[in-house]
Amino acid sequence: DAGVIQSPRHEVTEMGQEVTLRCKPISGHDYLFWYRQTMMRGLELLIYFNNNVPIDDSGMPEDRFSAKMPNASFSTLKIQPSEPRDSAVYFCASSGGPREQFFGPGTRLTVL
Amino acid sequence: GQNIDQPTEMTATEGAIVQINCTYQTSGFNGLFWYQQHAGEAPTFLSYNVLDGLEEKGRFSSFLSRSKGYSYLLLKELQMKDSASYLCAVRAGGGYQKVTFGTGTKLQVIP
Image (cartoon, rainbow over all chains, first blue to last red; front, top):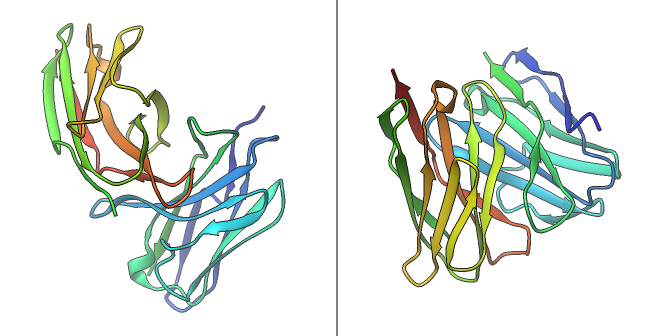
C-alpha cells in the first residue's frame, strides 16, 4: 500500500484566499483524522471521521474551517478565508482499529 | 479535557540509555501511545500501552502506570538516527478513537 497520501505537499497563499487540502487514506481504514501542527501548540486534532461520517469536530478552530469525506477514499479540509495564523503543517492520518494511526506526509501551509 | 506533560528537550550520548517521561491527567483513559517524529516528517508509531507494565520492542520499551497517570519511553543503545521528537499521546473519553498528543520531547543524540 502507498500509505496515506496528501496533496499538495506545500501551499503558499495570500490572506483571504481559499485553501483546500486533500487526503487519501489507506485502503480499508475506516477512521480518518485531520491534525494541525505548530511549534507553539504541537499536534492538535481538528476532526475525525468514522465510515465517512464526522464523529468529533470539536477541534475545528472556527467556521472558516470545514472538512468533508464524500467517500471512503477521499477527504478534504478547506479553509475559507485563510489567515496568517492558519500557517502550520496539516496532517491527515487513518486507522483501521483502536491501535496506531498512520500519518500522511503532511501539507505545509503558509498564509502570507 | 486532557493534560499531558513531557520534557521539552533532552540530550543523550550515542550508545547510552535515555528515559523520556510523560504524565497525564484525564478521565476515561483508554490507552497511551508513543510516536517518533523526525524533523520535517510525519509521526510514526512506536508503542501502545493499555495495561500497566512494560512493553518491550527491540531497543525501545514503554511503561505505563494508570494509577499514577505516568508513562515512560526507554531507548537503549542510542543511535544518532534516534535524534527526533517523541510524542506521548493519550486516548481517552470523547469517542473511542480520539487521541490527544503532548507537545513532544526533542531528543538530541550526541557522539
